[in-house]
Image 1 (tube, helix red, strand yellow):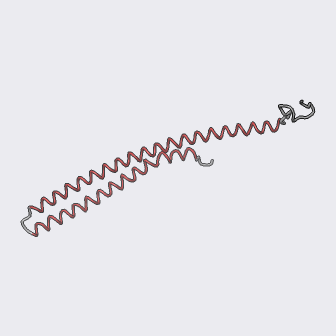
Image 2 (spheres, rainbow, N blue to C red):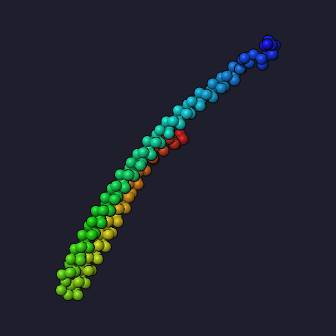
Image 3 (tube, rainbow, N blue to C red):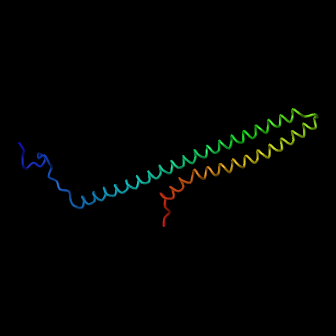
Length: 144
């Protein structure tokens, strides 16, 4: 049998939360919701920025590979032309001249190709970092 004077015997404990505690708890819940919404927005923004960065990196890697293959083809043809010229020489002095000219041209070509690759690398790095940089500037706004 249920004792009416025993508060623990009832199915619901008669306990009233003071209004100040209730208001404090509600304020905490509301702040938690706001923080979660901000966190969610930042996370979604970061995901978009990372996807854009990976897209730019993939495109850049493709450009870089294409450039390397173009250089490889040009250098291979230059070497084949060099060997073809060497096969037709009539004297040692002619061979030395052909060899010297080829070496000079290849050094100039190699230097030019390295400069192009360096410029392309800078461009790819800039394009890859730009989405992340833009997103970071949105998330971490400077103090006023």
